[in-house]
Image 1 (tube, one colour):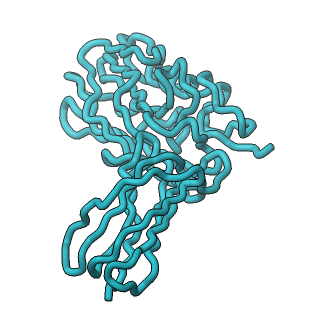
Image 2 (cartoon, one colour):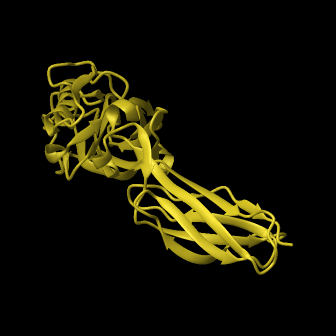
Length: 296
């Protein structure tokens, strides 16, 4: 059985160490929640004597006083897309405000998959140790901007079931002990990288003859670290006449049980053929490289 290392924190560790689990087993909510709980404890310790202890309340928001978290941005506002081998480094930034200013030692964020932290089945914690806060920079008397970095290795950290919608848990405290804890400060998408090919033949072809256009739609399989056919998906066959600037859709196909695509068209004029996939909640959109056909 292949062994994977998850990127969630072990309950008994203050630093982020890898927790090894069988390939068939996702990291449970206890490990994900442990990272949030440790960050909450750290924030409570750093806050003033007026602070109320944080509890990592999962989906519930816990705001004490006027501290607020806003402008949360994950990966620059773009979907997080990973293939089978290359690691990705993403950032989370947020704005923290409090009328007394922000305690910059208390900011922290955890990324998780699930309805809330208590029922999460996989999570991501920052590259720094749990007892190291976010990189929070004071930007005014009442505001600070916080940033955290996460490195994701699809071979070690991801499973197919986790593709789709993820959430961001965040916490911060003010200098006066006020606090803000948000169970879902931001939702973002984590997707399986997709590939699409097109081959139009024969080349060249006589006008009025048949052109056969084949292709394949595949996507990353995080369970096997290989690419597999994306089956039963609508894919558009598109054509751009030589000298034109835009493609038009000729027909829509459904990918086969192996992700294969095949159809025929009548040769009319020189131009470029391609397949186009609109994407799903778990897989990004992709256009194939075009294939030019000379019609004689």
